[in-house]
Image (cartoon, rainbow, N blue to C red; front, side, top):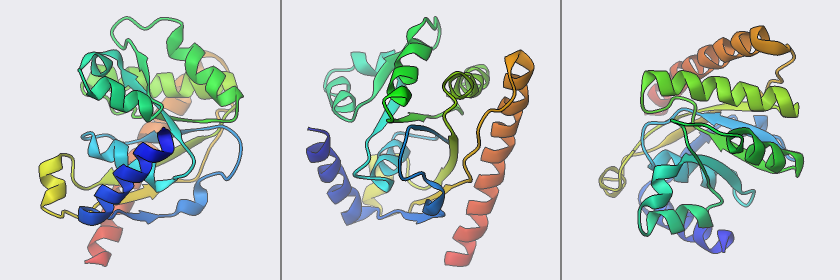
Length: 200
């Protein structure tokens, strides 16, 4: 089912919003890894998923999205899994840990919708990487965020950064690499803006 939905999404976005991808060579070709991407809307989720197709991304998404009729079904078909960000339980770590152990790709948008939530998600990303020894592939997206933007044929851009492993242990290690992830995502967005300017 994933392939059918992904192909349909790719066809739709290809008609109106073909995304230009930079530095895809940083994306591992085998083994499990975490993609940590900037997040401004739900079109970036679709474009990120299409960018490494046919490899599926198992997205971590807030549980409220799964309660929306139609949307919940759709994102499950895209291999998303729910987490309770306000009251995080063992599943926040357990599910992605198992997926990575199986050599699958986990997608996390660590910017969040609120500042505090963003901080929590960034540290959660690093915690998962620390426990699983899986590499983190940072990514940044700039482009349309809504269907309306897509129909306006706004161009989208996506850039991947060099993967890194969380090599430090404990709380201090998590804090160190959380700050590193924050800086990396900011730097990637700045680099992407330069590439966009050069592309025009």
